Length: 214
Length: 316
Image 1 (tube, rainbow over the protein chains, first blue to last red):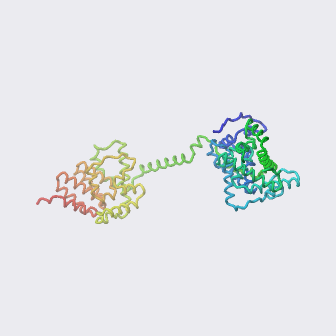
Image 2 (image 1 turned 90 degrees about the horizontal axis):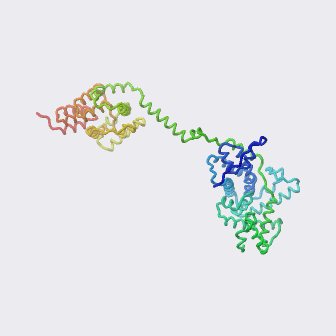
Image 3 (image 1 turned 30 degrees about the horizontal axis):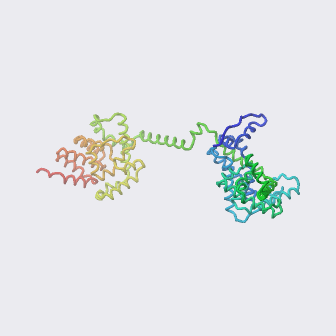
């Protein structure tokens, strides 16, 4: 059972209740949205949209599909808000939806790994993914790195890739990955070890990262 | 990975999920073991590389779209009104109101002209039954019961009466069942239920079940045609008089009904009932007289004939 102790609310005339909302747990925010508080939902969205989108992007290698997955994940949360009970972690709930959507999409499309718009992370691409890099040279280097990482990720089996990418989400613990994927902790560790070993090999093959002893 | 400690704890150490003590122990182990250290550094370099890539964010439009949906589908605050207007509660309330209106309309429906005619025929019978008139609540229940039966009967009158027209076949159980079905098809649901359930079924389910006199039940059982057709109140009253052994009064009641409704063949039930009443009292002559009246009604011809045959021959 989650602990639901709400932090003390303090009203700021310039920013209203937002500081208090930001301090609340995901579950408290979800319960607040259940009561009609859309600001609480916005706080949740701001907290998780980037993580869900990033996870989907690396799983699918397609920014359009990743946005669709992120949107659909939050829409499902919205649709089932009235039935939400804070018995399980909201984060597990949200990422389980996103993960299942990704798996569905991966199974529907051809088996060949794609590394499409991962090369196209620079400004001016149709996707217009913000990358925060200042100049063209930096952009090129970042795009090359991104492409190499995604090519390496694309070679991983689905279960290893999802374990690795879920663990990469900020704040996600090994236990969380186990809960979201429905695997036990040792299985998750094993998948991660294989994933890390294989990624290292691929990155070294592509001239990225230091070559280490086996 | 050969090292048991690293197999168990290296990933937790890599991801910073080990406690202080365990982390310190792992550091000492990695200093001592080249293979484990190399494995660790290899994993760490992957994480560094991935971290260098940085996190990409979605387009701002995604946030706006999702918030649009969140606003649209914003759950209402839960209140008493929210509870009251839940679909299940609303459906139950509407259903209860509809049922109330329906039953009220049944009770207060103005009688039709034909209804009045039939009801007038039982005035004399009512007078003779005053001593056994139930209390007002029971009287209301009885009135409802009679109304339901009457409605079924009147509906049947509007249609050709297959049972009456084909009484010869009515002795075959299968055919009787078929006729009951066809007759009930022409009725509205309530009447339909009453007709297909026989006379017993004509009693609305909310009414108290009253123990029927044995003679009345027996007289009903004897006539398949009777079972197929609901009985008008006047004849019902007459049969109740029969069950009380008041044969003369019953005869009068049937006579009145027959006079006012000469075309209604259902009076045959009354005649046969009165005939049996007299037979039971040993008045064979009167029994024969009433059975002969029933003999003139086509639907009850065969039953009346059987009854007459069962009587002792008339004295010379």
